[in-house]
Length: 308
Image (cartoon, rainbow, N blue to C red; front, side):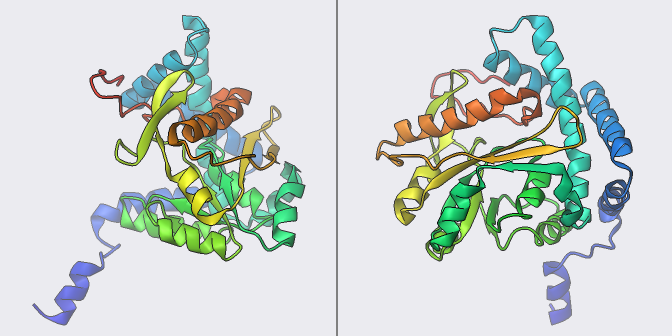
């Protein structure tokens, strides 16, 4: 095999027809990002309602999650939350397009930021931190808004589509100093010890091997041990960051909570329970804006049947 053949095999041609739908999606994101705000919100709402109607598997996952996490709500209230969640996540797609495809400086007038003093104090001391994030529908726009005030690294899972992964990496580059693979523990530790803040969202199911079971909305959920492990290896404070779209649908609130005290404790289950409690409290403020579409309870304790 020639060197040219090897290079071709190693580097996918993004001109191939299989990538045309991805190019179309990227083009639409750029277009949507420049539309008037109210029109964007209307498009996001329509996307959410269409997904509710046609994305049957995601609807089943969302219905299951909300039924499990909000048993105190009756069937009509749960159905209303499912609908609101799809709308919020549809709007989240156009917010992501805005955060990725436009200079985020134009968003400054849309953000209310509270608790900045917690991060400012650490940065003044040259100390790194682990930012405890949550998978809200506003995640990427929230990151762009955060970058107006503080720089940080991010931990993420690479996208399965290499073209979209490249687009995503370039789009996030203006507001993250470095993007680390979610399994790159050494990289995270290195950056925090160098005085960097690293944004890490541990509220997804990464499987049995990486997790312990801890309650989340009263359900035993596979919860990664890495949050406590990073804090233990670096000695860095863990600072929760919560963010949401305000009821006017035009502005956003970001808020740093005080660093967690006496964390980690050395007990993996206790630490995971505490992290889940912080995340749950943040979600309960605006439950419709959480990413209920993912299988948070995919991994079950041995012998328990699956939920999905």
